[in-house]
Every structure is written in C-alpha cells, then in structure tokens.
Length: 284
Image (cartoon, rainbow, N blue to C red; front, side):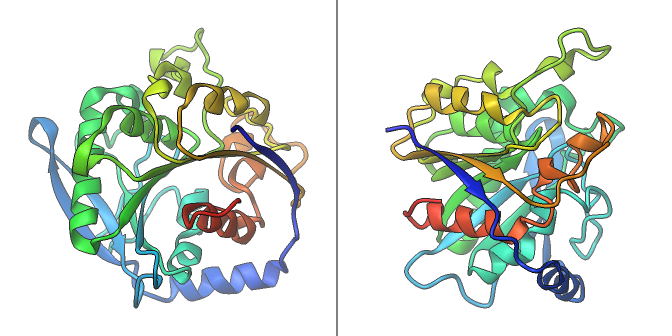
C-alpha cells in the first residue's frame, strides 16, 4: 500500500543542531577507503564506523550526495567540497543512531566541473556502486541501505534498479530526488531524472522524502508520488516534510543547494530520525 504523510517540523533548537555539527567537526572524519572500479578507475569513500552498531539492527548506509558528487575527500576522509549537502551534514546523526556510514566520492575520472554528470544513470556507475555496497557489507556484516539526495537520487535509483545479489542494497531512501529535467539545457545530462531508470525493478523497501517548500525546479515534492507509483517495494512510504525556517528570495541555483528547504535546513535531526525509524521497520 502506498502511504503519504504531511509533517510539520517539531523544530529542535538550532543551537542543538549546531552543537552536534561542531562536535562532529572536532572528530576524525573516518577511514578513507579506495575501491577499484570499472575501466581502470577507482572510487573513494569515507567510512565512518560508530563505536558499536545498533544492537539488534546492524545497518550501514551508503550515502550519495547531489550536485556533481565530487566531495574531494582528503587523506583524512574529510570532504573538501559539498560540505553543505544534507547527507554530509547528517553524518553525525546517523552515526549517533548506531549506523555505519560510507560517504561516496565521485569516480576518479569524473572529478571535473560537471562531476558525475550523465554517468549517474549508466550501468557502469551502478556496477561501481555495487562494489562499494559489497565492500561495506563485508566490513560490517550489516544490512546496507542506499541513500541518495538530489542528483544523488539518480545514482541511488540506478543502482537499486540494476543490482542483484551481494552487490544490491537492502533498502533505498531518496531525498529531494531530481524528478524534473531540463531537456533544453546546453548539456544533455541535465535532462536526466529518476524516471529515466527502470523503477519497476525496485522491490526492496523504499522511502521517498521531499520538502513542501522546496523551490528547486528539479525536485518539486509534488512529483515524488510518481516514484512510488512505479516502484514495487515490499514496503514503501512517501513523506512530505513541512516547516523549517525556509529561505525566501533564493535564486534558482541557491534553491537547489543544501542549505535550503531542498536540503532540509535546520530539520536535519527530524529527517534523520525518520529515516532511522523506517530503516528499522517502523513508519517515518
């Protein structure tokens, strides 16, 4: 059964969120892992392992940021780019819940201005992500869930729809997914959306989250119901988050960046908690 839930933020004090972020920044970013991927390339990810995986629910998250996906992970596994991305900001929240995290950088041959660009929808990209999923599963002996935000949702849906066996994720979460392309853009890949992928092949649990006030032209929350209308997940939920500080007067570019309703600004804890509940078998 398809479900939808409209939420009004419970607004945690901003100071609490900022304190969480400050504490996270004071700690090492994790272990830098390099995986050999297709065509003689490599892909790096930042592996964050909590002191102990949550009792009774061993879960690891493979996290795919938006934009070009190029985090520029340094040798301490710290991102030097896309620091405002919602998944990057939520790392300490997921780890505090007892989940291991793998924050994935762009492949070594996609580190230019456009980053992953149209490669996000390719079979080779799905295979690359399958190698990372299998590596994380080997390291943690945990269920591995794939979370993609914005353009990262294209990558996540691509992998979830193509992979099988140990390389396939156990569940899928899409936040602020790109559902509206630009077919008249100067670069062909800007026309890509999650709907270009075989969503009907996705049969794992699926959670799709959008923000009612997301003004990004590429991710209107009103189109998210078309995703769960096509997926065949064993358990699905569509969520529309509301509230938060909002940000009036944003440019078209700023509206698609992380520090806006598109990235659940100042609602990170609420959204992370809902994701954790869904992964653990409950409702968002």
